[in-house]
Amino acid sequence: MGPKRAVVSLLVVAAVVGLAIWLSGPGLGPSDGKKLAPLFAAPAFAYPDQHGQTVTLETMKGKVWVANFIYTTCRTMCPLLTAKMVQLQRRLDGADVRFVSFSVDPEHDTPAVMAEYAKRWRAEETRWLLLSTGPQTLPLTAQGFKIAAEKNDGGDAGDAIFHTSRFLLVDAEGLVRGVYDSEDREQFKALADDVLTLSKQKPAALAHGKVDAEALYHELSCAGCHERSELAPPLRGLNGKRRDIGNAQLVNADAAYVRESILVPDAKRVAGYSVRMPTYAGLLDDAQLDALVKWVLARPDDGSAAAADATLETDPVCGMAVRAAPDSIQATHEGHTYYFCSPGCRERFVAHPGAFIK
Image (cartoon, rainbow, N blue to C red; front, side, top):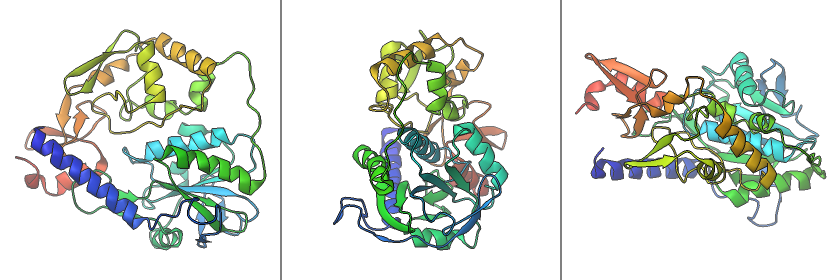
């Protein structure tokens, strides 16, 4: 992709992000006015969770809860949002609160699909409710929460559905008390603190002692992305490998690289992967971090490591560099295979291939 196209692509992405933020409503963070003052009433809803049990605004009364909005086939923002939700759950281990993820893809995300999604990310978390929504009721729910959730029918952005990346904090009476930008580290930290303030609780103390790195890997839901090579580079056979981070740069996968990737994930991202990873800075102590780095580097290759070495192609719709691998999103047109960053880009290409083939 040439420099001009790269700049245009970045401008388009910036415009889309700006539009999504604008659609999400005004800044309603906890620092606006009196801290944790009620902002507005959460809307009424009635949706089945991943177990098939109906969850309503009334059934949530009496509990402080945190809400976000995702869909299970998303390969861009949603894995990061889900990782953040799991990270928040870990920060609040032992607190009697609830975590609610509303699907913004009612046609696909059935309770069974949501159950599989929960199992992949944090199966043991009993406080997490993943709700299947309805085509007619989702717009009302989004409007009531003052957030964006609508299909992307045009433009160059990869997401098939526009939706907010914000988290909302709801009190035991059903009043929204804070809206937090999940991309802002300070706001995300404030969210955990504010949950405890509203619920008048403290999280259970973390046990100290010998670190079980493998258990920690799963508790942090690293497997949610890294065990799926279409989402993130596999963490197998990594020690001593050289990783392509784009712009003709290669880095050695050693202890320093793994440590930096855990603390500053965007510093040296493997080229061809659009999913972003949350930072675990402040969540892990030195002993946990050292143990996790050592365990990751010691994992033997099971054949999946080659996925990160796949040839890079350019998504003809958005211009993003993507992996040309069997598990990549792809479509064939007139005998040629094209690769895409997301289902949204593929759908637009399939509908009008001539508009994107130069």
